[in-house]
Figure 1 (cartoon, rainbow, N blue to C red):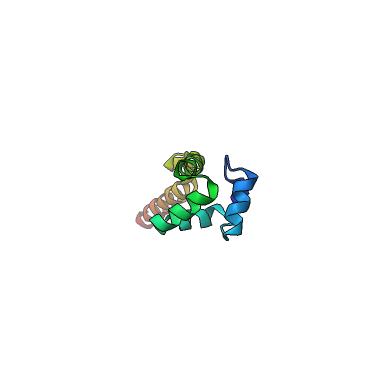
Figure 2 (spheres, helix red, strand yellow):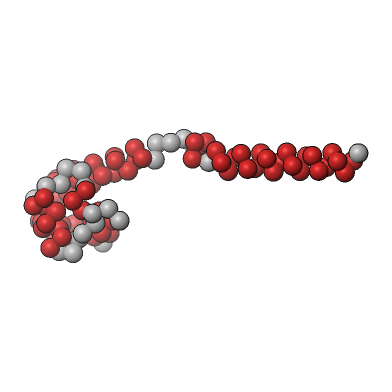
Length: 99
């Protein structure tokens, strides 16, 4: 879990106010936001309004999406290599059985 003070753009004062409400990690912040309007209002009041909350969460969303930028092939090259090797072994076994 990532500490709330690592949230890009958050001030130490905002982080302290969130921590005082037991929101110590970025994940806890997202969980609270997901609970609905009353939690969003509570968090917004802690950090200075909904616009500020949206700014912080947008920056975090962009940061996370940039980490996921690798292509599917780059993330699964080992899987593809193992599958290809397995296919080659099967083909070799079939050829050896026919000979």
